[in-house]
Length: 291
Image (spheres, one colour):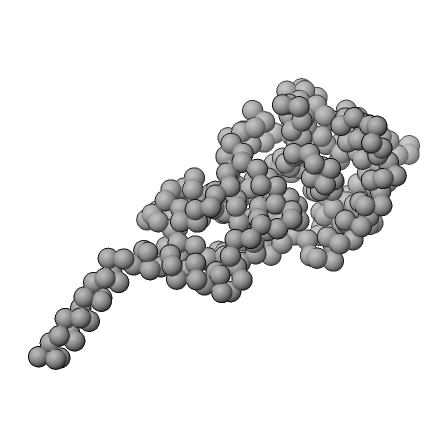
């Protein structure tokens, strides 16, 4: 009789585990994130902004593709490097592969602060349990040096009497006047703001990163915009969207350095009209704000 009762209890426990497996998984994952120090904590470089395609969330159990995108955006924007969550729908793994491999993930990377952006994004999904590991683009030492340089530079070029346009132009001009475009794009360091501010050289992604870092530091809302060949910035100011391309305002010249303002705070339509080489095309379905 005793063995029969034990057997029935065992079956009941198994049934409870089966029927409440989702809830049990969620509780176990939350406990893992908490005790491993991976709980969702916002760092100081979180922009914490909701965009048309990407919204911050506190619900880390996505039930559709858009909610999955929001979870990934939140993890990146908050500066989390390791996280685990449970997907509440069957197509999650397929959607995760699509987000990671078909351009969406890279666009999300352009919406978050450069310090929270990734150079490597690793993920794994087993039985709808998703684990994410992120290797950030900038290490702590690079961040410290960039911030220190900006803290020195900004007071020397910007005054409290300047308006927003003049403040941003002052930084634009400082970078263009003190940076040379590095034609050797094979060197990884040239793609980062660190090389722009420390070595005085870099490529378009470095120009875009340093401007995005500056704009955030000054309290402005901005993102980076990219295609396969180029990166520039979009500034949200006074209910308008302005494109800024410091790379194209710093042309390679044989007759000395040049400072241009052709690509400084112009609308998207102006940008398209100005660029006869079509180097500023972008996916308008992903960068909805720039339509």
